Structures are given as C-alpha cells and as structure tokens.
Image: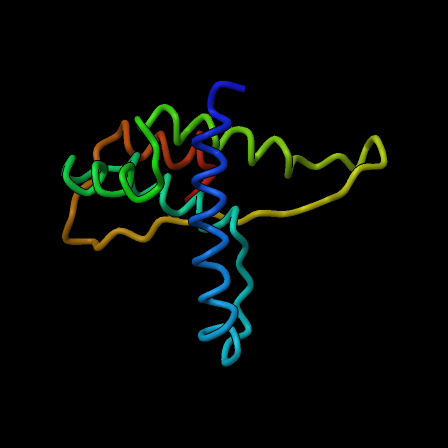
Length: 121
C-alpha cells in the first residue's frame, strides 16, 4: 500500500495521544475514544474549511504529505470498521461529529464533505 508510511505515522501519533488521554483525562470521564477516532478528528480538521496554515500544521504533525493522503488513510480505517455482521464479522459503530461555531459560515462543499465522506452531521 502506497500510504503505508503515512498510516504508520498517523497510528503512532494517535497511539501516543490515546495513551496520554487514557492516563489523564479518561480516568475522570466516561467518554470512549480510540486511536482511529483521533485520526478521524485530525483528518476532518485538516480537510475542512479554514486556513491552509492549520491544514499544513496537521499534515506536518501527522507526517502526511497531503489531504488526499489523510483521506486515503481514513478510508482504510473506516473499511476496517465496516459492519461485517452479515458475514459473521464484528459490528462496530463509529460516531463522527463536527461542531462549528455558529458565527462562522460553512460552504456547501465542506458541508458535503463532512456529511458524505466523514458521515458526520
């Protein structure tokens, strides 16, 4: 897979952040999250509306070369978590969301991206 290096780097970052969250915040919370969720959040932030500076910083942090590469890794993750119950596979439900301050407008292409690609309302 051509994005294997990017996926490995994103997984490393997500695991480090997960460890930090589990060891600090999760002790006092009933929220559940996973390294895949962390990757999804960063991918949504980088792909969404806003300055290219934010996207560039996220790409650098995750060791990715482009938004397309991030989206490709996200596709792989969601394929792994696909509901395989019809064939005896696991059933995993994922909830993605994006909360944007109402004082900001969101263009239709970004709204379409969140709703259709990320399945986030």
